[in-house]
Length: 368
Image 1 (spheres, rainbow, N blue to C red):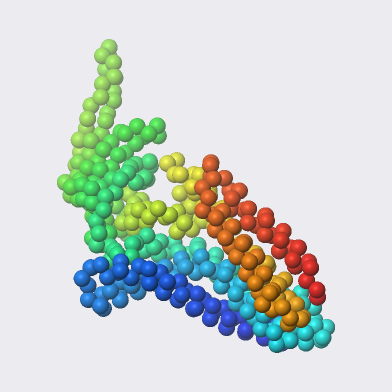
Image 2 (image 1 turned 60 degrees about the vertical axis):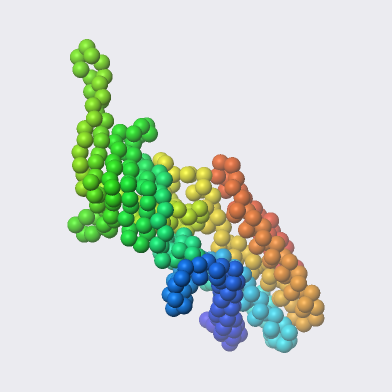
């Protein structure tokens, strides 16, 4: 049952949270645009086209920026509410009525958990939905630039290459596919002058590339009596090649950090492939797991500095809070950037081991 105090806190938290989201995301976009504005205006496009490209670039990146700032946004919104209540002596009045400060912190922690759930939804649903758009450069929002594709892993261990890939036209020029057996030996080669993507349909559940002048060469090894093994070549002319590499997947994998844009279910599916980089996938999965925990940990670290009935030393307490939470955020950022040998999961959990203990000690010292 929500009390008057709970409703008052939740209303204030929601307002502050929405303001913090709008301010921090807009600030992130303005700073990024200030640094990269010349990239958008390299081509001789009219002003309307430039504005359209800017909007088309930044709206998918809002999900990525939110995932990076979610913990800071939540902590700022919650601690700003507590700081205002402390400055206006509202916490003193609450304690005078017999309510503990831990009781005041309960709806704030519940709100922090709900905000962390938004982070999980963002990383597991929203970012994978726009992942191929996140891999674009500032100066090629429309995807007009053609580039080379070199040996991307496809289904059943196949390797796909192309001289040119056109994201806008969704086609490949001079495609070459190396189809391998379980031992990694090439058993078939597939070439075509051009390949155009056809997405999955009800009649064709798998996506495929329609080949222009396709040619497939298969190696057939057989043994004749007394003559030993002999290898022949069988040439066919297929018109389609079924593939797991759609144009969006190819565009995504050109990005150096494309694994960060996948959901946990996609990472588990990718980890099941024999040709996958298991160490990198393991690291990303642990970073994804610890991300929401670190986000909530920032709030737990900041609460003890504001859960105080006395409004004195507000600036000093705010400075200590910024140093402590900033240290946690910095250590978490460094830990997620470290590439440990063998794909160790330890770096991702170090901030939780260190600052989780600090948060428990600080919360225990609250005078309530």
